[in-house]
Each structure stands twice: as C-alpha cells, then as structure tokens.
Length: 426
Image (cartoon, rainbow, N blue to C red; front, side):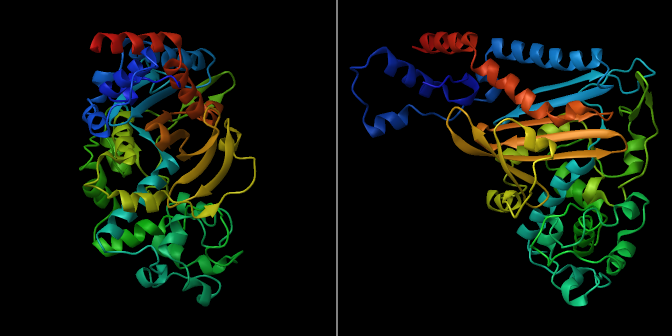
C-alpha cells in the first residue's frame, strides 16, 4: 500500500484501510455502511502530525540556510499549501544585505511574471460576469490596435493575447514596456513589427501584447487595473499585503529590496517602476502569506471568486511549448509543456503510479527579484518561493521542496505515526 500522510485522507477512512490489513478474512461492508465511514474532512492542520510539522520546518530551514551560507541568495520567502490550508510560511536572509532586517512571511516582494497568472484569472472573472469573452477581438476593445496587416489584426483575440499566440515575434516591444510607454501607444505601434505566424498557431512569449489583456479589463470596467485586481482578487481573498502599483510598494514598510551580485557578495538596488504601466504582465507585489492565500484559491477553495468551470478554462493547455532548454523542462519526470491563459501547464510522469500528472506553474523576474509558483492538482499542493536577488536556485527550488515534502510523507517515521493514530482511534 502506498504510504499515506494523515493530512491527505479523512481519519475514519484511514482506520478502515488499516483494519483491512489487520484481517484478510474480514468481509466487505455493505455500500451504505461504507458511506457512513466517510465523514467530512477535518481541518487540515488538525490532521497534520507534530512530527510532520517539525520535520518540514527543519528541512525547509536547512535547505535555505545552506543557500545563505553559500551566498547563493540574499533573502527568500516560502509558502506551502496543502488542500485548504497554508501548512508553511517562512522567511530567510535579509531584506537589505547592508542591514540586519530579516525577511519574514509578511515581507513584500515583487513577483514579476507570476503576475500573469493573476491576469488570466482576472480575465476569467470578467468572462464569468459576461463583460468579456475569450474570443473577443482585441481591436473591438482597443480600436487603435494595429499589426502590419489589418486583416490579421482583426483576428487577434483575448485568448491569443493571454496564451502568447498572437503571431508576433518573441518579446515584441518588451523594451517599450520596461521604458514605461503607455499601453495604448504600444498597441498602435505593432504595425511596425512583422508577424511570424497567423494568430493561434505558434507560441512566442510576450509582455507588451500580453499586457493588453489588462487594458481590455480597464476599458470594460471603466476602472484602473490596480483597483479592479484589488476589488476582484485581493480583497475577496484577504490578501492584505498585495498591491499592483509602485506607490503602494513605496508606502509599505516591510519590503524586500532587490540585489545584484558583486564579486563574492551582493549589493542592494533601488526599487524601479518597470511593469507598473503593464501590471498584467509583471506589476504585482505580495508577501508569501498572501501568495499562500492565492494558492488556496487556485486549489479550488474559493468558488465564490471564480467558478471551477471557468478556472479549468484558464488552466487548459492551448499551445505547446517546444524545446528542452527551459529550466522547468529539466525537472525530474518532465514530459511536455503547454501554455494556457496566463499559466504554464506541464505534464510530469509520476514514478510511483507511472501516470502523467498536470502541474500549473509560472516563474517571474523583474527588478532583480525572482519568483516561482506551482500548483500540483493531483497532490492538492501549492508551492511559492520569492527571492530578492537573481539566483540559480530558482530554477529547481519548486521540485526540490516538493521532494522534501514527499520524503517526509514516505518516511518510516510518518508511517509509524499513521499506524499509531489509527490504533488510538480504534
């Protein structure tokens, strides 16, 4: 029998499984009796063993302390969600390398392109409300939108924008976004770029045209995007440190500064305004505590914010991402990648079950901050890591942390805890 952690299965079901191993001659219960043995799940934290909590804390601390000792990072913050609960949040290192100001679970970081996942969900909320449709033409919302061919420009949809399938070359006009040029101005200049393919036919990662999704939301609501995100996502999910503006970041007191490497150490940098004119592409700020609340939502715990049907549309693969050079394509068990609506959708081989499992993921980098988020629907697990410096550690921190969790779950000590708790319940 595959080893089980108490946090993942209702207690009474565990007892039933345990007793089935105690006597191979025991007859099966009638279907109705079996149903009685499956009560509503207990709150997750009440099901987590003390040994699991202790070992998780110790293992995560050891992992990040080792990186600090080797000067691979300046500061980092981590959030882990299981089912309906945040089971771990913590901070490591410093907000500013020059000061003794430790990162904690409320420290705010810039999350870069992890913001794109918020844009996809926000668009889904407005699809649900009937204000937009995935197949709405961009030019119908932004009349001055231009491509080299007007016939092609009239084909580009909201779905194309959110899935990086507009047909434009890789990173078209990202330089203009980083320079703070207004999105409306950029929208009228795409006619200077020669499209590579028909819309919907090929994946080429974008920032400028992706950010037009936010421009569309602003126009259908008549409100600034930062206000819409606050009203539709941050407030309902009680994400109290999250924001979508440079001004909000400056006003906050518990903020990590970005850093750049100098010889054998690090030097702090100033916070800049890049991407705050293109919030949908990379302009959100948040702590890992709030990212934990975000992951709880992404695991389906707040259907009042977005119905599961529409969330499934956001997470559905639209276009395949080729190659084998991307860092996530080197994760253990990697099979293939697609892009959905603001999210990467990967397939990985589960070595225990020999089945493919979906992973919803995105990484981000802006102003020398680095971020990673991944949702494992099959495991009911979410992992988010935020850094205030560029670091190679970001490339595999998600699978490393998941491996830590799995090793604890599958350890003999946790199996003993499971058996002892089952016996006590008898």
